[in-house]
Length: 160
Image (cartoon, rainbow, N blue to C red; front, side, top):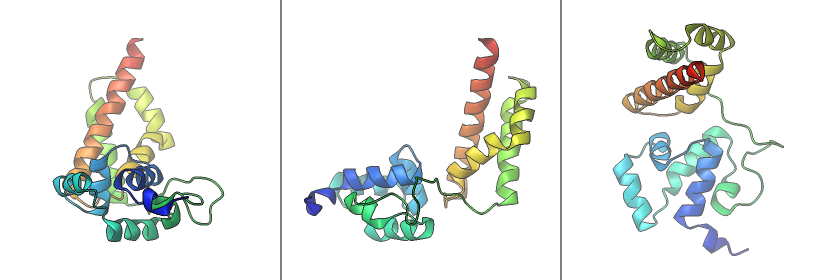
């Protein structure tokens, strides 16, 4: 294996996105604490933010060898891929629940939401997507977007 070819921006960031369980570069920028436009500039220049990536890997038990070189498994000391889970933050869970109720209010199936909320499924899903985002403004926007997406999906399911 040619280690140098694996240290290009695209493969490193794709593996990092996979380990983080995120879908786009903006989410990666938010998690590592770099402004999105600065991160996109780094992408254009091929400059990997090594220090930021390593700090997140250490915090989340992500294998640096896997992210940087594609060697081994995505997570240290795990036989299977495990999505990182944050410590429970009651304030953040309250914000998520409030956004879900606002998104569903007057539309969709409130019984479906109550059942899902009871099981913690929707809130836990959103929590795991946003808990590590450093910017409160970005995190609030992501929560709102996720809540609306669930409400739209429930409404669509209710109509089909």
